[in-house]
Structure formats: structure tokens, C-alpha cells
Image 1 (spheres, rainbow, N blue to C red):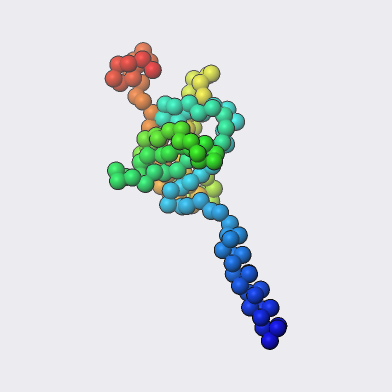
Image 2 (cartoon, rainbow, N blue to C red):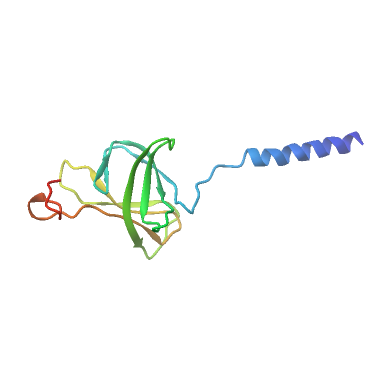
Length: 141
């Protein structure tokens, strides 16, 4: 009888431990990804200093074309940036990002972001530049 109680107690403790010690995983629905940049990087016209950031696809009524950028512990929202869907032929088992070419001395600009295993990803939008370095609306950038 004592042995049965001990086994039941161990089973209960093991079951409770499996709930409490479950590994934390990012939610694939919001594509939560942690990026660490060793130098400043531009995202949709906003320059982020070197550091660690959490990127998530915002689930909004207008669609999933907005990316939220948080600090590492997600206590501060740095930016909501516009995006459009992008596609690749072959998915990868890891996060893939590409950068746009920029002139010397400018921070690299994040162009695309693909979540592991996905063929569809995010392409970041940037203000259109007209002649003389002006935005399409005519204001200097």
C-alpha cells in the first residue's frame, strides 16, 4: 500500500513538473523572432541601434502586414512597420533575412524576413525616394 502511494505521488509530481517545466516556444502564428544586430540597422525608414530585438507579425483586422518591433524583454514597443508578403521557392529550417544595398556609411537596411519552414515571408516597405533625395511627397528625408 505504501509503495502504491509513493508511485502515485511520484506520478503526480512528474505530471505537475511536465506542465511547469515545459520549454518556452515562440508562437508560429505571430512569427516571434529574436534578432541581435551588432551594428545599427534600418527597418522601414527607422534606424535601430545595435542590440537585441523581438520581431512579431501583428494580428490585426486589416491583415498581417504590420511588424511589431520590441526590446529584448518585450517591455517597450520600438516600432510598428508596414510590410507586404514575400515568397521564396524553397523554405529553410532557420530564420532568413536579406538586406538592401545602401551607400557607404549608411546602416544596412532589412529587406526581407522569412520564418523557419515558411515559403511566405515579410518584405519591409521603405519611403520612395525621388530626384534629389526627396520622398515622393516632396519633403526632405
